[in-house]
Figure (cartoon, rainbow, N blue to C red):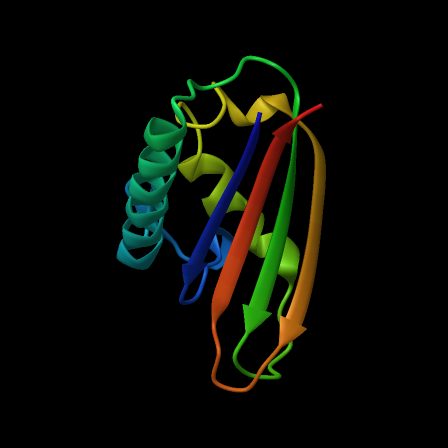
Length: 119
């Protein structure tokens, strides 16, 4: 199984976007909106290809293009992406055995590509 999801816009860092409510951590609206949008894209791709969530180990590669040269940690993007694809592309993100990422800068352009394949 190979799945490729491409999108535009920023990937919010779940690490920096959690809100404390009582004794619980709650995702910020920007994280929830990104995850629901990514889930909808993944569902459409999986349905069109006739694929079901896999229970096999997977590798996930993330290409991120940042629209400015501000210092950013690409690993902060993984949390939102991995959570959003649970139960759609794979059963649980603990199945991810290989994580890789690449970041580039193109002024004013914010986009991402996510590649998931079984190992």
